[in-house]
Every structure is written in C-alpha cells, then in structure tokens.
Image (cartoon, rainbow, N blue to C red):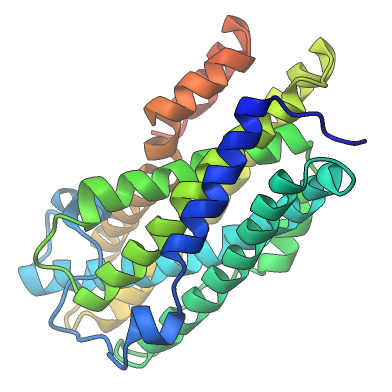
Length: 310
C-alpha cells in the first residue's frame, strides 16, 4: 500500500536526511581512532550503572561493575538493532512507490543501523581484550529478531521508539557529562547518539502513520503485544544480570558468598531494568506519543505491566 503523507511529515523526513548527511561518521576514522580501552577507566556512568545499589563493593569493584555493564550495554544495542533494522526495511516498502523523500530517510536509517551493529561488535571484541575471560552474552540476535518481528508492526515500532529515545536520554543526561568515563566509550555513544536522534523522529512518524490505518480492535491487540515484548526484554535482562553477577564473582579477586552474589545480581537487574525499560517508558516524548494513540484503559494496562518490573 502506498503511503500518503502530509507535507509537514515530508518536511520532517527531509530534515532527517539533511541531518543524517551532516553528522555521518566512520567507525575507525571518527570513533575508534586507533584507541583501546583501559581497565583504569569507568565505562558507564553511575547514573546508568546504578552504582549506589552495590553497597558491599570497593571503589575498584564498582569500576569493574561499570566495565561489565558497559560491555553488556554495547551488546544489548547490537542485539536490538538487528530487529529494528529489519522492521525499518519492512515499513519502507510502503514508500517504494510513494514519497521518495520518506523512502530515502528510511534507507539511510537502515544503513546507519547496520553500521551501529558493526560498531558494537567491534566494541565487544575490544572490551574483551582488556577484561578477564569468561564473560557471556549468550543471546542470538537473529532468534530474538525473529520472535520480535512475529508481533504486530505497531508493537515493534512502539518498542523501537522507546529504545531510540532512551539512547538520547542516556547520552545527554549521564554519559556526556561524566568526566570520569573512558573517552573512547564516551565517543562511541556520542556518535551513536548523533544518528539515533534522527531515528527517533522517523520512529515517531512511522508509528503514527501505521497507527492511522488500524482498527480499534487491532490497536488494542497491539498494546497487548507491546506489553508482551517488554516482558520478553525483561526476561533477557534477568538472564544477563545473573550471568554478569557470576562473571563478577569469578573475577573480582576475592571470595564472594552466595548471599552477596544474589545481592549483586539484583543490583545488575535493577540497573538493566532502568537502562532498557523504565528510562524509555518515562521519557516525555514517548509518553506523549503513546498517550496520543491509546485509550486511558490501554495506558493503565501498560503501566500495570511496568509496575511489576520494579
């Protein structure tokens, strides 16, 4: 089905193209620049890693926590960008024989997402060269993408908007301003943020365009599927929190009893739920866009589901 866009929407797609051209970057020349990671640096800021909840740890151990979470942070983005890119390519079909400005914007979006995945694979390898062996991120991105793409387009686009808004929030509120972070890690997310800022605008445009063609019943089902996707994300986070706690205990240089490991695992899960679920769900733009599309009852269902993840 050809997409029919308002002129104001076409203008927003065009602005995304213009900014995309202006901020475009290269992984080696602009981001990595021949640098490497250093174990003396933090990778994630305290506001994201939720360091205050790790009450039993020394300062060196807290830095190790930030490094583990930093590696997981890169891996999670590489994971979600697999299904995001697939969905962007899918919805671009609606513009193939329609608005070519919108099509170009989405094609550039896809190209950038492929580059981001390549960047995060590099970052995982580079961090792996500095941290002890034994770290695991055993999530198959293709299997996750296949499961996510089995849900409705509305649900996937809503989740995508959530994700790409929180990337901006994380950079602007936490990563950019922390002078104690690895400069390389900061640059990774500076350049990521530059392109994700356009992606979030395109997510909103495509979600609203798709929503306009849904029936009341289809939208209600899509809300339930969005809730299911958030639950699936939480399942991944729970498994990774357990894996990262075990990795920390095995490599922190001291004995860690079962009770402390359990507390550290809860700390990881608290941080991951903030990073990947609540910070996006609470983003003002996300709440504004979502509330403009759904009923009060549907909003309450979403909030009730989120409340179970604290």
